[in-house]
Image (cartoon, rainbow, N blue to C red; front, side):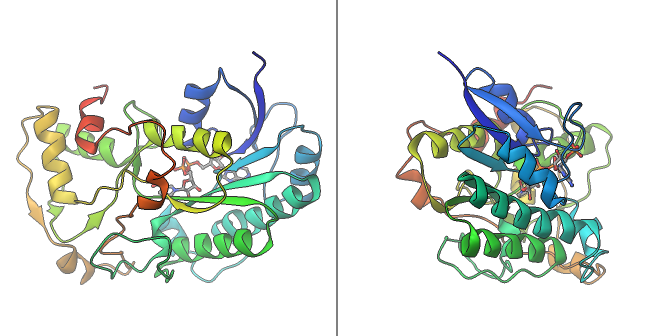
Length: 292
Ligand SMILES: NC(=O)c1ccc[n+]([C@@H]2O[C@H](COP(=O)([O-])OP(=O)(O)OC[C@H]3O[C@@H](n4cnc5c(N)ncnc54)[C@H](OP(=O)(O)O)[C@@H]3O)[C@@H](O)[C@H]2O)c1
């Protein structure tokens, strides 16, 4: 069977590279990337984005490129000429325009950081966004551009993605493992909740969106809610790392930090569940699959 042509941005990244690794038999990927040997594409360059899309027969563009360094983004707060705004907002605007001009469906990756983190329960798609720092603000602006201007779109929001193998950009799970192994893991917050996303399963959701032509906004984490402390303890116990996890407090930490942190970024995935045709692993199962 011939492969389905598929355009993507950020296909070298933490999430994108796993999608390419696991779905290389099904999709013929073209990465719109600065490092591409024949046709480098900077998504902040409208002409380069249009040319790349116009040259492709792909019906879908999976947009995963982003400026993802949240602390680095905070230092750029309000600066629309700096990389965070240019990549996250301008880059997305360029993709929306080019998708519209070439009749392609845009699948846009977003984040739970579009919320303020004040809600006690997991966030639903119907909850209002209210980002509290620059990365979240630029990602919320990007979502607005997609929802308002794209002719046909899907947005997938995730939180704290991790994968089972080691990747150069250290994810939530591997940061904890490294911290334990070097005996430098900070006390873990008992008052910070998040919604871990197992990338090995999330990439199947991207494929599902394409196969089932799902449109609109979906939360696409594991649907579980964990504190940093409970998550670190589970990593320690399941992987038998023999480390004593200490309790910490986000509330206390926030008194010393200039950068704001959301207290809760867990996501409710009931809307997505109606479409799932595979059984995603629980977070405990996912941790158990870690390649040490
Ligand atoms: N990581 C998280 O904690 C997290 C949490 C929630 C949501 N998300 C969202 O999930 C998506 C994927 O995140 P990730 O962690 O996989 O990202 P990542 O590992 O930081 O990779 C970002 C990618 O963007 C590409 N890129 C950056 N600037 C570009 C430009 N001007 N033109 C073309 N490509 C450019 C990079 O290309 P090079 O490799 O060539 O530099 C890289 O492949 C993003 O939309 C992010 O906002 C991530």
